[in-house]
Image 1 (cartoon, rainbow, N blue to C red):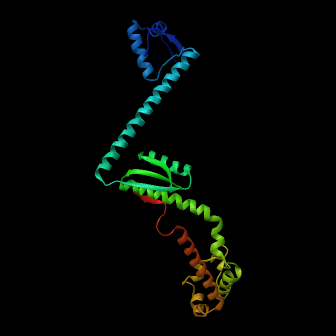
Image 2 (image 1 turned 60 degrees about the vertical axis):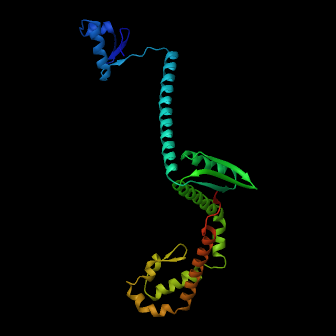
Image 3 (image 1 turned 30 degrees about the vertical axis):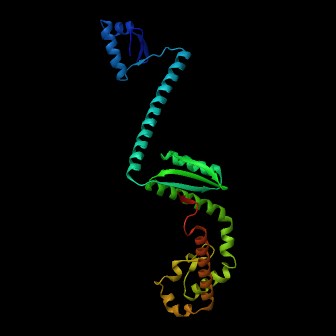
Amino acid sequence: MINKNSKVIINNKTYNVKEFMKKYAVQDETTALMILDKLVAQGKATIKDESTKEEKLIKDTLKAIEKDSIVEGLDIEAEENRIAKREKAKAEVDLTNVSLAFNSTPEAEDFRQWCNENGINDTEVAERNGELTLRIFEVTPNEYVKITRKYNTEKAIKSTVNATSSVCEEVTKGIDFGLTKVVAPAARIGAEAGMNIGKAVVHTGIKTGAGLINSGSKAVKQTADELRHDPELLRAGKELRDAKDKMKSFFSRKFGGKSTGISTF
């Protein structure tokens, strides 16, 4: 707000109120102040800040405090609205208590923080009978779904990471995916069928591509019966089927079945 002691900058030149009145032939101070206020509002003039460094520091600090207070007030309002919505939802459905097993306190605390961030605050980390658990109280059905989905997802990821180093060894044990059993027969078939199998063998020969089986190839149709009974092809196919079965079995053991570590009380 402009006052009689203010200085303003117009077109890169500084004026006090009296200088402005003289320059622009304004007769009274009240009118001059109104004009200057309007010019500042329109961005055609700026008020010159003549504060000392100390005064500027205090002013900037007060502005920061004011902004922080506004943000804090918005956060409090949002949290109150979220709590009100959750209490309303709790009143309309049956609630349950959930217990989640963890291997370490940091893991349990991380999950507990996630619960708090989602408005679920009635929680506790406890150790009973040597088992570390996060107990979550008064959970709605919708929240239960979210909790179990997150828990199972994180558990699967950790299991995958821990198993990565041993997956290949366990799955491929006793299975030769080398050139002899898979790629060589495929190459032979390609030669007999007059095909280019460059696009048909992918990832070190484990996967045979569409070019090998494409029914659009007349050569394949002509040699189909011969290839169907080719001993090398049959052996290669068996190797691939065995590999597939072992992989399915492995991942079924790792991640199949009911989830463990979750219980209700």
